[in-house]
Amino acid sequence: MEYGCYICNKIIKTGEKFTFTKEGPVHMDCLLAIERKKVPENKQEYLRNLAMVLDSELTYLVSLLSLKSDDKESSELIRRRITAIEKQAGETTGLIYNL
Image (cartoon, rainbow, N blue to C red):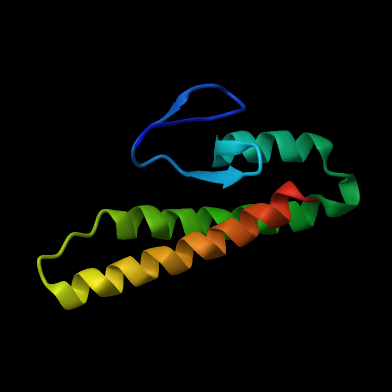
């Protein structure tokens, strides 16, 4: 499936870090650039920490998505981990978006 970033209007390519907000799919860097401009100074450190958490989550997710296994048990484990990290990244994105 192909997505377009609602901020920069570019196609999100395979392997790029992106997430979803209420407005749609967005590159992680595009979201953070916009948020840095609108978040008050007293919340900037919190935003930096959230950005590092989101980056770690999305890095892990990209890594998991590259794993392939013919073994049913391994495939199921990978699928469950992907689902869990997508949920966590979504929660972190929500925290950033709602600052």
